[in-house]
Length: 256
Image (cartoon, rainbow, N blue to C red; front, side, top):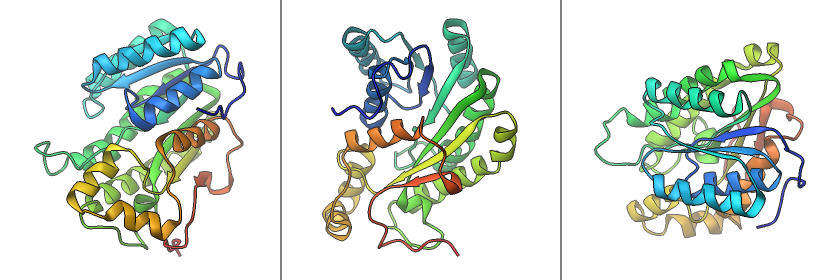
């Protein structure tokens, strides 16, 4: 893995990445740990995988780690996680809202909206007491969600896209409050990401979807490449519009 952040640049700082036991979230944790951060690894039901990641970054980089299981749609569970962060590290410097979903079966018709909108706002509310001046909140999304109001996506992904855009909008409404507290906010949007669970589920539901999108875009980022961009966004100057939109956008129509 290439290193997007300078070694030691996050010494003494604490980062929480939701949904970080695997995939993009796990690689994002690795990049923060390489930079010297204390890392909070959040998982819903993959404890062994999260604990393995914690051992890895501790042994490789000496990172202090906290592994916390929490269902982000359950406020009591989220509050318990934040209590653990406060007890161990005292405060939080970077919150990466990476966890998302909605294509899972048997979790209810409203699950996508509960996770991708309501839980994102709930995470922010729970984290605010730990976030101080100079801290940063990063919301991770996809082009298919970010541009859903102007560019249709495949039917299988539409409920997720609509709910993630609703989550982004709800968080953007909080920007004035965050700025008043000296807290930065940035949205990181990428195209379909090679090797993610979402891409796998979309390919299963719509065979050939990933190859079609790859042909249209010319190149799709892989998990590590996207994670590197998220890590950079957590420390770089907040761009105009509070967003970092990655890759080829020729297939997407900006909002008017």
